[in-house]
Length: 242
Image 1 (spheres, one colour):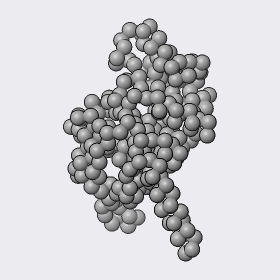
Image 2 (cartoon, rainbow, N blue to C red; image 1 turned 180 degrees about the vertical axis):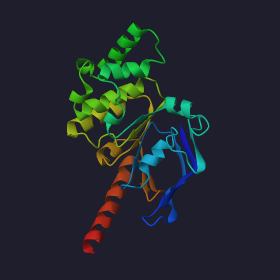
Image 3 (cartoon, rainbow, N blue to C red; image 1 turned 90 degrees about the vertical axis):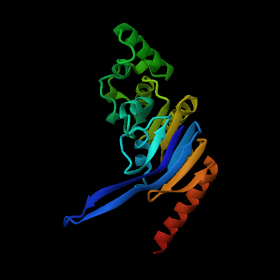
Image 4 (cartoon, rainbow, N blue to C red; image 1 turned 120 degrees about the horizontal axis):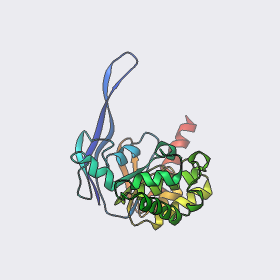
């Protein structure tokens, strides 16, 4: 379970003349997330990624706190990052080894000391995700969808209890988006996913809409997505009319 207790973030900013101001990224977020699959939707700059990054300590709130499976990421960031794996929008940001097999083996290094066992476990994990045939291929030769599934496999290798996915389908075509959606459905871990992909969001158990750093809607996926579409359409129409 993930809890946001009045969590907020204000950052310093300077204009081109050097004048200082504080900008609110998130403001007083109160949430208890117990559902297995939760999506966060909202416009660019709404604070979606920041919300996810607070869960494993990539970003520290300047007010309030976040508790993820009993761990405060500010107090124990190492444990928080072990239990909450982060998947970036572009998997090239996190695939650091030359092949999928080597990347997953790297994730297993702390948990499996024996090299032969680690190699076999990495291959088993990739095969389970349908990636066994590309295990030894260069990561540079993989499709976007293959890279994202390898990134997911590397994160799962450390056995987290929470998966944080930051707009994971942005760079994927329809087939690969569907493949990733199905992979999410099969996972036992709790998933918190920020996304512009409203089809992916609608497949989740719960959706939270964030705008200008605040929660503006929260509830069953289909209902929240439908209301979000209506709001964005109205705002687009208002912009065109001006």
